Amino acid sequence: MTPDQRDAQQMRLVGIVIAVTMVAWLGMQLLGREFDLAARWAFLVDLAAIGAFVWSLLVTWRIWRRRNA
Image (cartoon, rainbow, N blue to C red; front, top):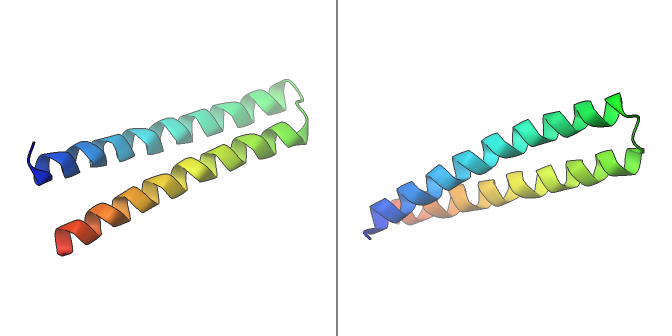
C-alpha cells in the first residue's frame, strides 16, 4: 500500500468517525432529554464526543504534516 493510499484510507476513517460521532452525540442528547437522564450521563457522552473529535483532529493534522513534509 502506497503512502497516498494509506493517507486516503485514514482520511476516510476520520470522516466516518466524525459523522458517526455527531449522529451518536445528537441522538444521545435527544434520548437523554426524552428519558430525563441524569446530567452526568450527558457529560459522559459529551466527553466521549470530544475525545473522538480530538482524535480526528490529531489524525488529520498528522496526515497534513506528512503530505507537506
